[in-house]
Length: 136
Image (cartoon, rainbow, N blue to C red; front, side, top):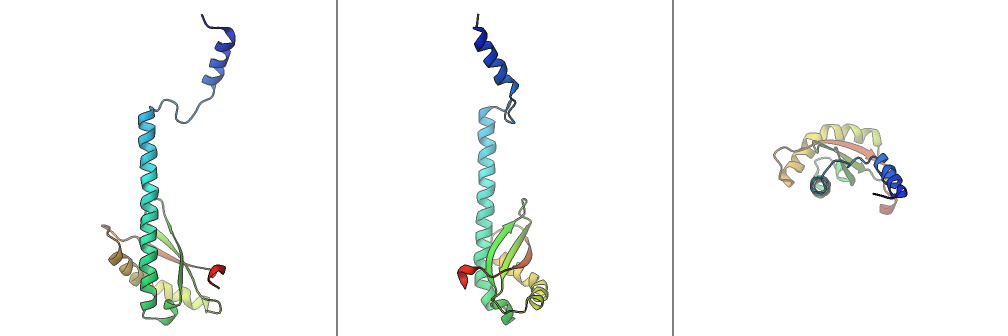
């Protein structure tokens, strides 16, 4: 027979439910590995896209595009769309760049598709952000 204090402690532990209760440890580790590989895949894809655009933008047909700097590439959870955070140098005409980026989306996607190896190239959503202070 168990001591009453031990029984009380056991009841308190059972009263606290954890999201992983009922999930075998093996399955929980497998789910964690899958999540880790998914985030690694996202980081790898975003890095490839950032490198491809960093190399492609200086060769752009429009000199205003060639002055843009890739700040960050942010993925959607399913990796179908990527948000390109681009920065223009200080003094650049922001409104005109937004229109040019809208027209250049197919060209940007084509450049990304050449650089990465995927069945489908992700949709790109370019967004202008403030110029990073480290580049000033």
